[in-house]
Image (tube, rainbow, N blue to C red):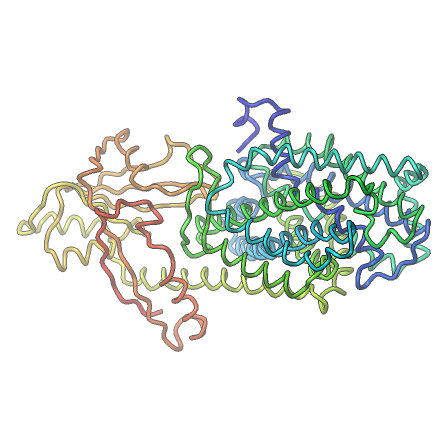
Length: 628
């Protein structure tokens, strides 16, 4: 959704709303990031002025280079008709490479890998965010430490249970809560900076350079904690379709970035004055009288950050389904006013189970930090590679310019990735393993769909000669009204039509063959929704187009056929669908065990009737067995 789409709302209003959705993830990083630098499992830095200033300088320039320059200035331009995120970026590259199979396949693999890692982030972010916020109870009084885990589990359960109700009503509170959160971050930062104002000298990059020169090994491995300060950059890019480019840039440059920097400097100032405060610099930087309100505010902010990742997972799942890379799943609308408000039960409950397993296994935010960062860094690297292609092909950048911008970005991300590699044995394996499993499932589905398409194509009958043949068959009776046959192949006879003729021996007065096509665009204009072709002999061929961010509603789309001379009476239509029963066979296509996984996914996918919103009392399904 482009900025022009939001023209009815003012830029300040959109910026305020964006604060509550787009920046929740990166805005909760101060809860745990600086603590992990000095007290993480793999960090053994001495808490002294030189190291504190060096780390702060690294944080400042990581935020400026990775988030501000790469994402806010450059990558946010790489939208797909207003939509952002690694899947939308993949779709854009795939579209430009449709005549180059190798590049197209590489873009698909990279995009699916990035999507798989995003799901891993969707598991880790709610767990570490909520747990780190509730751990503030330990600062209020150590006797509350035993309540941290139960309260965290209760909050997480509530977050996922409320998803089926939708976030349209509670969403109106997101902007005020997150705005208050950022103002509090900035306010407490200024309060602590006032005691140690020389901490602001860390704005100079030479402190980061000196830190690396004098302590190269500790400085290198500290990057695995510094990366935690930018973990929401990719989520910010993925959410840009909700608000447009300008509100996100305004929100980041004038609110989020200043408040984050002030808070990090405030935590650094506290550590300079009291090195022991590095154990939990966020909550220890807050006056005792404000601890309870800040714990509550932090909990609210982390719930919102979790909400953004969960709804992002829902949206990404829908995109993957529309693009053909994921089995059809039940997708429910939770708002009659906002198209983006959706709920995917299978994804919701899967994430809940995994989040609870992660929380109960890792137990503390510090332990969870060991699993956090590596997946985000890999996703950022995938984005840089795909954005390089967009810059060269779509933006028409000369090669030297694209290399000058994206190669240094990729090098920085590879360095961060290398630093994070030490986390793999102690938790970093989880998002990698989880992402690997998701990638395997997505690739298996794609491969299986390709094999199924080949099998069906081998048995296909060309459409026009078949229709001409039927026209000569004078004994074939015609029954009243209209039959719509859904078929994935535009030029061949649908299996459902063949089975209907074989078993019922009749044709309808009007026969419409519908092929649904999902375009690598977020949305299709209503005027371009259908393409009608009259074949003759009361046969019509209709192409229906949907974008990957749209809900496919075939009956509603067919109403647009009237503009092209084909009138359809909705109450006089019967829909005929083919339902294939797959038979995995050794030596055919994929390995037998992988074929069985594909068959399981295919069998349990949401039915085409539900997916395309066909009226249940007007659908006829005809099955066939297919060997894969």
